[in-house]
Image (cartoon, rainbow, N blue to C red; front, top):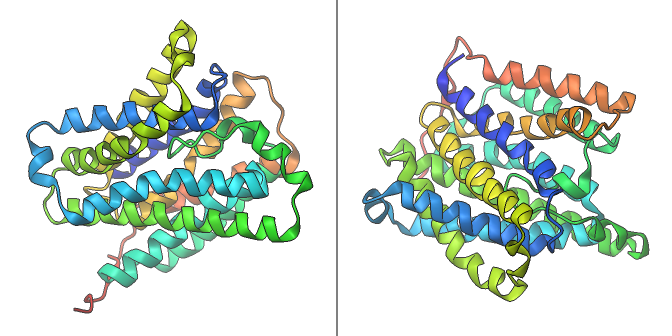
Length: 314
């Protein structure tokens, strides 16, 4: 396996640990998500160094807005559908939208094997979460920093069908936003941009956008040693280091493939639940875990024939 897919899987492993680490913090979920993105985005911006200013472009700044907007869409989704449905739709639709955007905007057509493996991976992810294989209140939205609290799911019982449908639409919009900033980053890196600088612009910009959210949500909860350690890990590890690796992976990995490999995140979360939290997997979750793992292997192994490329329309 090439180093690119390994870097993406490494990022996914870090994302998968976010839910377990988040259990150490009792802060409001919005405040925790904002703090994580502010810390991680600042770290990525500092890592970019002098290349940060050279990498700034309208496309990457728009990508920064998409990174921050994903948070809002995710919370809007889970408050209406519950964290399980919101997570499945948002995370599951991300790879699909990424493949479509990569094809429509840049003429990079994914292979048939990618389409089949991605479909199987999304189904496996849905089975894993639907079977209770992941603590949805702890893991939801770990990739973006949107740690959803259990209180969101408790509100859903009183919601009507129209509310649930609206939540699904918000989750789909979140998946589209994730696909947009992933494709935008891959495009910039493919055109010769330094991956550290590209991620620094997008997530540094998102950190600036989310800083007022953090201030309004309050920061007193960070004073305790446990919360400080957890939020530093979430910011520096599951955001800063994770997106550093993701950017490195995008240097040699097609963005559609990378988005599918990112579905390793719920697999790691489920395994941590078993080992660390003593949780048990239902049979449907075990089946989903196996299907997801096999699908990711199928995507990660390089194909013998190159992907078809279509010229982008002017």
